[in-house]
Length: 291
Image (cartoon, rainbow, N blue to C red; front, top):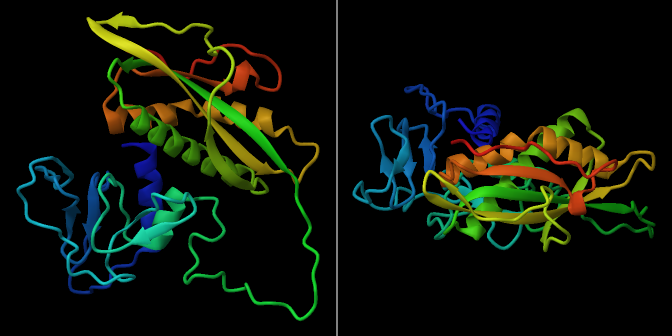
């Protein structure tokens, strides 16, 4: 079970209460991979073309198990929610899941908890925040300086024809989970944004090459994300904190890629850009190539 699924199940258990007293049921322990659990019917409803397997999970791409299960749903009541394709700070809902979206959720709260765990507006209903009321007296907002920390993910063991867009999406999903876990231990940590950027400098493992593993041509890739942190504590070394946490939890990112994309040979080195970690530029054992 992936870490993302674990987070999803934890959020689901706290946010949902079954509305039917006649029928009590529990979602599968592994969730509905490419779909959403219907508590009234006690089944996984799947995004086309996926259908339930023998365990009821949406993982079989047969496209022969009916049409859109949410065709007659009511927005805000029983329609699925998914992370916005145009904004990392929003979740959308409706009866038709957009093409290319494979992760959907039962409620806005769950979607925001997974898609935008650090957003202050994602989970608010309506077009404006509830406290966004003009004041009769002018106010001066205190500006908190932001610190930008660029994290580098050097992946190895990828298939030669790997899908870079999907790899980036799974690296980002894993990074969000790592930051959410860190915030539990560091409640004062305020992340204001995560943005992709081009990577500079040499690879963290100081090499870039194609390898042959069991007669399969494997490739490397470098992906960088800049995390913007509100610097509320001038004595905190945020770069060292984020790099250390990303290294220690690198299996979260690997789990996302290996499970969601089936890139079983993938390994990874993580660190600050140009090998920086607040102290040194040593190699990181974020993962290895299983043989």
